[in-house]
Length: 383
Image (tube, rainbow, N blue to C red; front, side, top):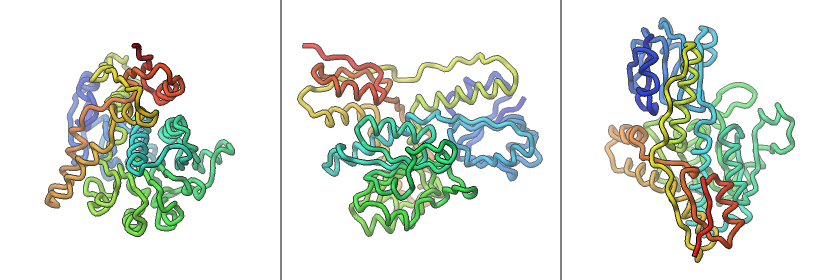
């Protein structure tokens, strides 16, 4: 049994080495020659899996350690009888906390309160639903747009795209599709950007092709009050550096890169492989690194200030923005390498549930908010 895997899948050796002959190959460098003699392929979003890679191979199983599968030709796999597994929802909390962090950053920089703010959530699968949960916990009204779910459920909570685009924050959480009744390729073009508020915040943690990047670059120039938060880019790793310069926050496709999410994805993929091979699951996922830590919040600060301090103690998107911004000073030939290196050697990042917060005892509503956001333990301060 020969397994070819991307080395940047978390704990890939620990989880899969005992299941067969494991070979690691950088995700952007896969060729038909690499896949030809493999039985199982384990990939990430940087590897396109289609007939060009698989034709003539003996591959029987393809797994991706990602929640999305737009890099996989599922129709081809089905036609060839090749089994497939993904890790849906594995990074939902991490992405939602990324969105939360960026909203808190930009509200602070603009000097505006979260009170009265609205958010258009475009796409309400695992990630979009979690984003709506977190922003809703802050009292932000969420306007949810998801035509496929609306057709499936008939639920009146789903709103039109125009309504979602009218919000203060517009956050994208759709798969990248070029066909079907609801294609998302260039879902947000010049017309849609024009419909948005002059001071809107557009957040793209979906896929680069969902947004017309030249149109966004133009709109950011025309409307200096508009802000873009971009984690997913067209033509990664060779991103549009001019667009990065105009973005309020630009990051190297790491919104879902918490240690917790990576471990969750590997565990889901491991179980799927074991089920496919009809072997027992013996690998036990390790506890995530950087165990619980305690954060003590000062009673003198406002609730919003305390909230920012608690969230930023776990994740502050500005750190990743500064790291990616260094790309601007690099030679063209090194920019893509820098982008990939930031992803491959990403720092330890835990989710909010890894932090124990000691919050003011006389603020029960604030403690309830921290619980709703996912902080592991919220205890009263004493003395």
